[in-house]
Image (cartoon, rainbow, N blue to C red):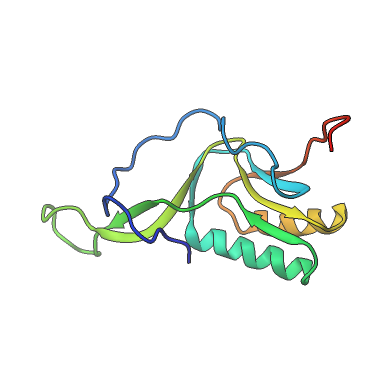
Length: 141
């Protein structure tokens, strides 16, 4: 599972997700990308499941890039615990995702194969997504 090697603080406050993604919202590495359409937290397990689904679908052809990383820890308390006694221990790690964020990218394969791989990846994620293609600039190398 993905998680940071070191963090300054083990326990984060929950915070509030608002707005659209202004960074990480273009296909930079591959030819096709999976773009989020909703706000949400994506667990590290879901990211890994999506990576496995895409790489197995491609069968050794092409390459898959993961564009998100779970930096935020989410804590939880044991069941049937009384109130008080402080904040719970970190249970899992999540990536905070805004609408427009590119989650995964695929390159080096045909459009049909990329579409199938990204569709299988999207099925593993808890938010709605769509496939987008890299925008080519006319006259650029």
